[in-house]
Length: 148
Image 1 (spheres, rainbow, N blue to C red):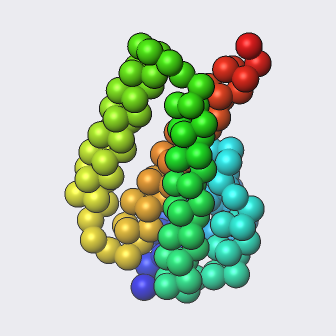
Image 2: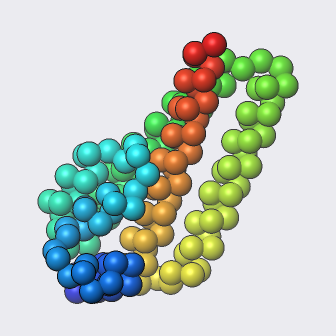
């Protein structure tokens, strides 16, 4: 399984960056380059320590998913508390639509990537990135509301 993870990352780097990608990049560096702003440094440090240990990498992803989900929920609750009337209703509808999109995307990605270990890492990474991206958006909305 460890070899499969390395081969996936190497193949991905070669596909995206061509032969110049042969310079060594750690798994954390590859992920960081692709990740939205807001993924925690704790996650990258965990991935660095895990190296190619699949169980440790899965643990890193699980912990980061919890952090990003908590961040998203905190931003949503804070933003929701600032809204009244139709604005509040629109926010609730928007969040429900995003949740549907998130769940549908995860289901699609699971069917596309398959059930290999590397594939499950990719599905989880996409989920992490979506959670982080949504938290970023809600925090931006909150800053707009707070700047009024």
